[in-house]
Length: 281
View (cartoon, rainbow, N blue to C red):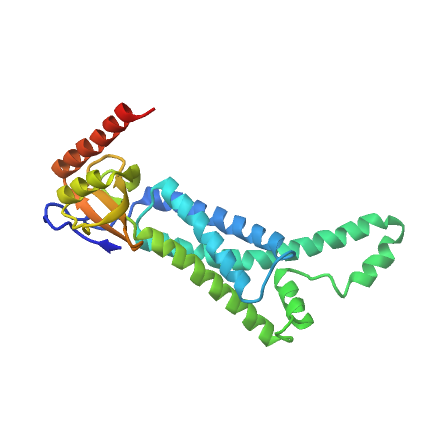
C-alpha cells in the first residue's frame, strides 16, 4: 500500500504528534496495571494446557499488546512516550505477575492440604516446613533450584525467565508501536476511525480515483473504499481505495482529502447508493 499526500497536493496527513497530558497519564497507568494483571492471569491459566517453549511468551506479549491497544483507543491516549513507557511497565509486570500468581497458587494449595487434614495438622505442617517459601523471593529461588525443563537448574533457569520476559516485552511493544503510528487528531484528541466503507462499481471507482488523484489501471475487476476521519472532523479525511485487476493482482492506495475533495467524493458515493436503490429488487 502506498501512503502519503495525494497527487493533487491539496491535503496531507495529520501533522504534529499528540502532546503530553496529565489526564492521559492518569488514565493510562491504571489501564497498564489492569492489562498486566489480565495478561498474567490468562497466561497462568493457559500454560497448563498449551505452553510451547519460546513461543508462549510471544503469545502472551501479543495478547497484552492487544489489551493495551484497546485501552489506548478507549481512553484516546496517543502521546507516544507515555504509551510506550506504559507498555514496557505492563510487560514487566505481566512477566513477574505470572510467577507471583503461581506463588499464591502454591500457598493456597498448601493451605488446602492443611485444612483437609486437621487431625494431622501439626505433623503435616512440620513435613512441609522445608517446602513452604518464606516469601515471593524465596519461592523464586526454590523454583530455580528445582530446575526447569530444557534449562537445568540455578542460573540458567533465571536466564530463561529473563528471556521469556524479553520476548513478552518485544511482542507487546511491537503490537502497541504499530497501533500508535495510526492517524490521530490532537485537536479533538481522537484516533481516526472508519466513517464509511463498502464496495464500488467500477465506473464509480474510476470517478472516485480521479477526484482523489489516484491513477487506476485501465482494467479492474472490482473495487472497494474506506473513509477515515477523526471524531470532530477537524482534520483531513483519509481515503483508502482497494482494487483487483482482471488478472487477479490486488493493489491499494491511501490519500488525504481536503474538505472540498471529501464532499465531492461523498456525493459520488451517494449517487451509487441512489442508483442501487432505484435498480434494486
